[in-house]
Length: 184
Image (cartoon, rainbow, N blue to C red; front, side, top):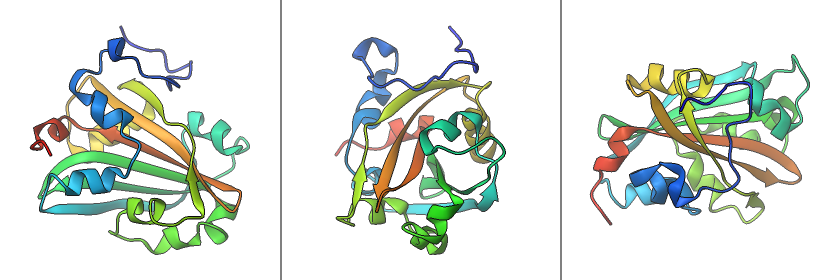
């Protein structure tokens, strides 16, 4: 069943019966995704795809309280094991936050965002939300295009992180190769 891009695909709860199969443990993991991948991959790397001010995707406006037409600062990276793409990550923050509480993000380059998110005691994470994304969703299209993945459906998750009352939205799309990592 293909989901409609006109309704919010992001679920607050991911039941085992959701059809996500082997992705389930990756999706519901609440700790650092960076640390979890590093524990299974000795050649972990981050490839910076893009960063700068652009229009966020439509479903990213409400969680960040962005007005229609308001641009945001966006950072896109791919988490890799060697040269193999595992996760496409898409981070969005309101422009005011990029100058304030989250100004460190602009200088991350190829450093993983997870190192900052899970080591700074001033940062808190809200509840994870989950989605089965098909090619009608911009996040799926972007991940597939950037990573050269041909998959009808991709599983993703996203959550808000807050620091000093300012939020960023981090979305992670799990690519099929992540299932090939050795067990911990």
